[in-house]
Amino acid sequence: MRTLVVTAVAAERDAVCAAAGGHTARPLPGGCALHRAPDGSPAPDVLAAGVGPAAAAAGTATALTAAALAGTPYDLVVSAGIGGGFSPGAPLGSVVVADAIVAADLGAETPDGFVPVTELGFGTTVHRPDPALVAAVARATGGAAGPVVTVSTVTGSAARAAELARRHPGVLAEAMEGFGVAEAAAAHGLPVLEIRTISNAVGPRDRAAWRIGPALAALTGAFRAFPGALADLPAATTLPGAPTSPPDTPRRTP
Image (tube, rainbow, N blue to C red):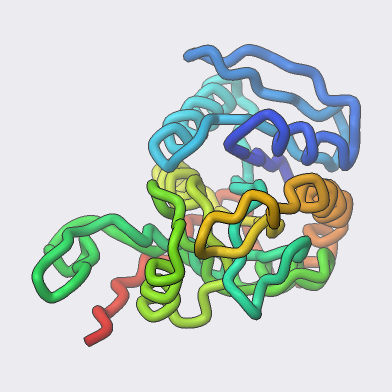
């Protein structure tokens, strides 16, 4: 199974590559470099596509298109990196595997509160990875499975954290790229996954409390376990070439 892992920044890319080693950088159109795993290795290829959902979508689509044109298409796309965790479900240093990849701020503000784009009559706000894949990766990495929200503006207050938790029950993590990666994967008819390791708590920004180094180390550990998780998938699970599950239309909380 050929897997493309998409991170935001080079430090996250390097943490994923460190799980196996031997990657070589190859340029893609647009200036990004794809770090290719050695031939025959179960390790994924890794791309640092940039920060935010737009950069993530563009970089992912570029890599997927280049691979398809070369006759070596990918079978699975993974958004990965560090992120903020919602207490108490995702403590610092823990692993989160998304069972829902949610565009948390794609919509409109109204006098009655936030309205997701789906309730405006168009678009999508949720991609749901294959449950068997989520369970296998969570089990292999010791991670927790739950929703991960994609935002364009990182949360910096307790009020905003509480609002996200209210609108997305069970949310475990916040990051900035997952939904963009998922949109590109869906456009290519490929399954998607999101893996986050927790570097900070979602809420008031307290840089002194961030634990970026341990979160990057946890990311390397998660991807050491990742090939084994794929190997342990139930025999009936067919991921290569399968489209993502139909997107949900979340209902607005009164």
